[in-house]
Length: 223
Image 1: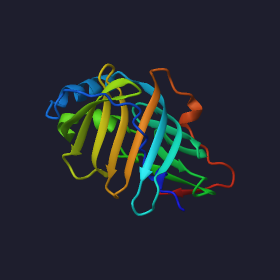
Image 2 (image 1 turned 90 degrees about the vertical axis):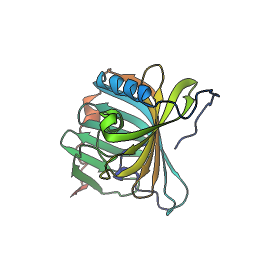
Image 3 (image 1 turned 60 degrees about the horizontal axis):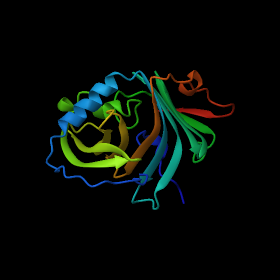
Image 4 (image 1 turned 135 degrees about the vertical axis):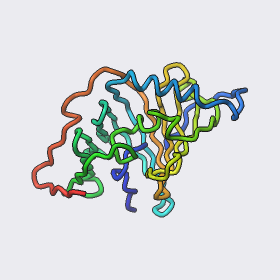
């Protein structure tokens, strides 16, 4: 069965490992958590994390689960190196976004200009926490936890209709303000969840992760 086109967008369902009860109401103000996430993001020059991504497309069938390591260097460099399926890569080198998925489309790499925002762009986390007051309507969903760390779960709906997603739910660490999970409802009807673990902040990114050279014999398709 054909897998969903996971490489056509960068955004990231894995199982929530632990849930704790909370007496905080769903009507709680979402903005303190979002402001915390926004302030934290402004202090991050580079970030890396292990990721689990699950894409659910009702038109295709069973969810597609992938694993790997994600790298981000502000403002416009981003990479995902997949360990499952091994060999797949997504690289935003500051000018171009390279989508190389030999597991599904061997023999070619898709190259496109980097968009500023969106699940196809390098600003995967920043797009949800930069200028959130201007860009989103926000609702507090609940208090929860990931890997026993407390998080606030916030639902965001874009105020403008020019985004490739209709809504997103982000999971913000209550202590450190780091975004640890994103649930994205894409305009195509596809649901995408990305869970980040083993986050390393401001530790730098290996240069080889943020560059891409097409392997010999691979055709470059410009979009």
